[in-house]
Every structure is written in structure tokens, then in C-alpha cells.
Length: 302
Image 1 (cartoon, rainbow, N blue to C red):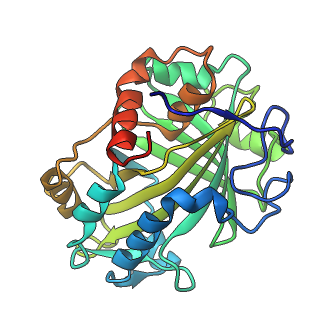
Image 2 (cartoon, rainbow, N blue to C red):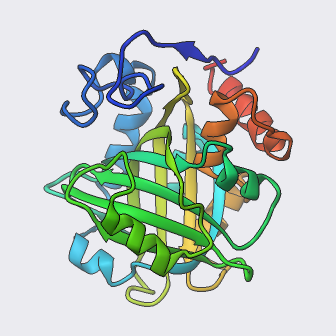
């Protein structure tokens, strides 16, 4: 079976987009978050992850910002919720969990930009460096909005630049254009929205290396919208270990290996484009797409 691609008749506020997944109405950002129907298949694992994170000591946004790691090395993993829970069940002595008003899981809403010819996607598909991703992101629980430039340098480093915007933006304003020119002069200047990505995230910071070098993001409830389609990825999770320099003795990396999970090259943006835009080349990402299909089948969702 193939990953399901469903058409949506609702009209979103961006041309060519359905209303963002799980949001009531058609105005992007007008709803309080995912509806209960949109999360039916995820609820057991969602609640299980929240229960697991309750055993972790909390860290607030101020302390988390001390380990911002905007210039870093990323190691990524794709796995089932079952393996995720197994790997992180015994890591509370090593990590603290971001807590915002008593919540350990936070919602993220992201709008990705690209040129009409998908130039930024194509650079990634070809493995070119340096390359950029451009996005407008809402950090729902913290009430923050940024236009973000995510750069992969020719040395393999991930560098992130963020411009506060006060709201999600669907166009390149003069302020953003100036910011792009100063931070990413080689990025495509003529871009527009092509993809919406929604997910729920847990963020962990290494207790022993606080202020130095490791934070982890765990993304579930992954959903993509664009080109008039929606694609959810139930039962799957993406873990990113962000470090100043790759340290394979990280407790999280060791736990993932013990759970039979190994690093995978994955980009949520490129994954979404591959699933939603059939006329765009995606040969380089077929191994990741096949892995996700396999994991969804393992989780009973294909």
C-alpha cells in the first residue's frame, strides 16, 4: 500500500492550500489547535509520551535558550512511537524536559517557502551545500513567531537565523527581504509558500552538558499540507539530536541504538514536498519514504 494522499475541499487562506490540518475554519492560525478528530490515531501514543515526560525534571524557555545551538551538528532518526517510548523510558536522569505552563508537549505550525521551480528543494535533493530552507513558524505554546533561515554549510553544520515577526507571514516583507540579503545572500529571493507542516514536539536538554552542547527534539503528530492535499504520518516520530559536535556517547544516541534505531537522513520539508508534489523529482529521498512506509506498517497504520 502507499502513503495516503487525500484531497481537501476546504479553502485555506493561501492559494493552493487546504485549511491547515486539524484547524477549524479556513483562516490560518484562527483556531486553538488540532481538533480531536485529527488526533484520534495518535492519542494513545500522545498520552503515553506525555506520561513518560512527566518523570523528567522541567526546564523553562530561559534556561533552554542557553543551549540554543543555532550553529550545530544534527543527527536525525525516524522511528515508531513504540520504539520512541522504549528508548526514552530510562533517560530522565540524563535530560530535562521543556515545560511551558505545565505542558511538556508543544505544537508547532510551519509555513515553508520556495521558488516556483522548487529551487531550494532541488538543491537539497542534489545534495548541494551550502543550501537553505526558508520558513515562517509559530511556536504555539510560547506565543512566538519567527521567519527562519536554516542553512546547511559546506562543512555540514546547521546554522539557524531567526527574525521575530509577531505573526505567521505568507509573504516576503521588506524587513524579511533585508534579513535574507544579510543572512543568506545566496538563497532564492523570489519565493512564496509551498508547504504547511504541523507537528507536536517535546524538547530535552542534557543535564550534564547544560549550557554546553546537547538538546533533543522529539516530533510526533506529523502532518503536511500543500498542493491541495494533506498527508498525516500516524505512528511515526522524528528525533533530532542537536550538538555542538557529534558525540556518539550521548545517552540518547546509545538508547536509540539499543532500541534498534539508527541515524537517517531526513528533512521534514523535503519529505513533505516528496509526498505532496508528484511532479517533483524525489529519487534521492526514496529510502526515507520506504522507511516511513515500513514504520507506518509496523505501527499498524498502513
